[in-house]
Amino acid sequence: MLELNVLNYSFHLQNPVWAPLRRSKLHLGQLLEEFDLAQRQLEQIEHDLRLILVRIPYAQKLLEIRGIHVTNLVGVLGEADDLSGYSTVMLCFVMLG
Image: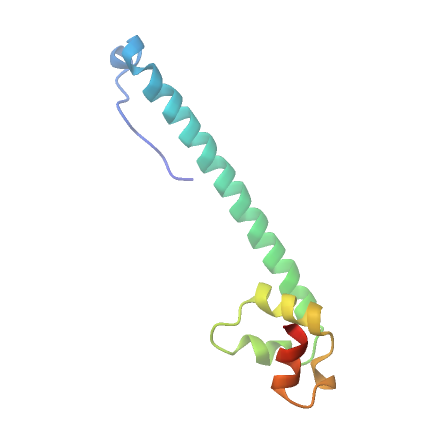
């Protein structure tokens, strides 16, 4: 987690003038903790998605395409189902909209 060290002088922070700064610092710390949690959750979801994609024969080849990310591929496969049923790429794109 990122650390925020703003005016850590206790005699200054006791002054009521600094109350907004204390509240802002607390709120920023909470936001950073939420961000870290969301990032860990996203990493776990992506890990789980990769485990699912391993079972799909052509998924690893598709992930090698520049710009294709795990979440994009899962979304496409979820919408299009089995890509081997499409004779051309354009038919798949038409179906995806």
